Length: 365
Image (cartoon, rainbow, N blue to C red; front, top):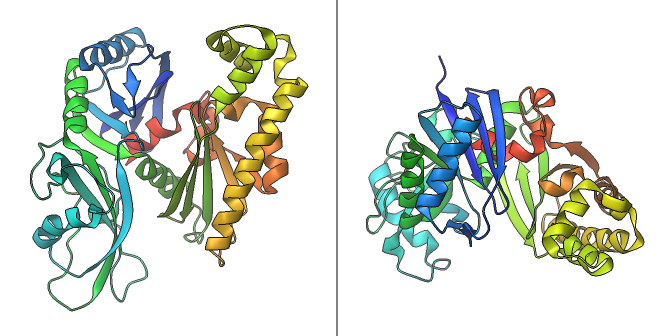
């Protein structure tokens, strides 16, 4: 029988939980996050976060011993690397140096993991543990590189052949992983997996991709509070992540100015469409500005990837339920817009599935 995991997505304004057994979603729950408990993708108080997670599990009668947490993209480095073919021990030693141009502080403070994308002479590796997207268990930092996943995520590269291999590599601050381990412990669980956002999405793509569509292109658009992020995939291959410095907070500011309220109240107005604020001219102008930024980002992606046939976008995040914003994006991108529930097995039956996408994906990695 498949193991049960509690997927945990710690957001700036909401904590999202998803209980999954294998690829079946058993239960979801969410609660508001206290202000400033998450900063730059890092938990600011392990004690408070652990208590919130424990009380939320108690409130919604969630019983789980294995935690799978989402790693914020703000604190994690992820890149595709092409390296000479080498064995696992050599790879774990050398992978840290692939991040020299990205990590500016002491690299010994980071832990690392990887997943194989391809090997010479193979279009795609057979399904096995090493094929999976990076999913990390907390481990103490070591130098020059420490795997975040000592329970089998490493693939087994061949010995010397003079050829190359392509892999998806991830680096995360060791202190952050230790904090998440402690948060899980305080909630009565063991941290089993810590998945980058891209890995959570890859798990969902793998779970729902139709047969014969291994090269299908995906754009997953997270309409978040502080930023909007575009995640591009070709099948299970992560292509690029682009963050735009616009989000629902921009809409809140406009509504707050127009209605003479603070930004927190303006956010409530926006989500509940108080006084039809979602359809007012000032909101429509804000939607159009966001849509234009997305159009520019999409045009740049297509220019940089001339062979791309990308035609589909999946909407997730808090902005996915704001219909006028959704329509502005449809008009600007001229793409087929899908509900995020399509990326989850049985997602049509999961209430507010778009909100729990990452928590579900982390549990399925």
